[in-house]
Length: 308
Image (cartoon, rainbow, N blue to C red; front, side, top):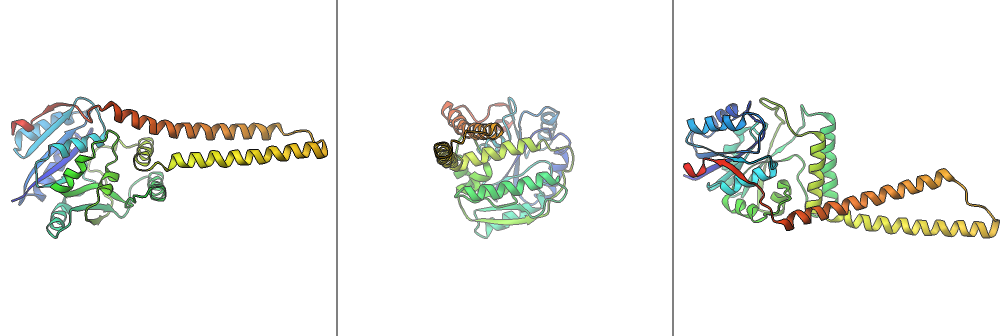
């Protein structure tokens, strides 16, 4: 029987882990599986909980980072250490319902390379978070040649071939949703309603999601740089035309230059645009800088993988 590797990134999930593993055991009772928890530098007792679960269950493996490297690094570490023919990526808070896994496995048996979950509602989530999510998908798909599926999640079952393809993209600045789309392969989307967390609170604030969206955009399109060029060119042309108008008015009508408020607004507007353009350029330079340093995506402090 094929081995299913269930990869579970964890950050401060001490209250959810037992509920999660109980659901996994019920759902996968008839399957050959392993569960790989990745402790991403949690500040609570997540690691202790994982150790206890691993000691009492031979199917449980874990990796603990030396610090918090972020969910993207945790996903990558899990995929690197997964040994199964099929790999399932899922969150520990049960917002990704485990009961979909058998349906995903069946889709792979039908010939699909990937079976992925897509939320069809944002019920229970804050209004501004939902609005921001919709805006992000529309913005990303309008400026990038690669299209993201609205509502798509990281929750999926993949073949070994797909997983190996993901691991070939070993960049330091990672955006998994984009990577999953970029590599291609035939995907079956399975829809489900949004589910509340079983316990604890999310660590994804609006600000973190905003920064994550910027990371996503700069990882898969350079259009913001092109927009900065066009914007600078258009403003320069308009400024030149306005200068000609001022000169002509002065020569023909001896009309002195007036409008202190207009001048200040123009200066502030142009200054803001310049700072935004420099910021966009700086973001791309930062990504390039991080890649050239070739630092590891994660550092393991503790694991039981070699013991099992």
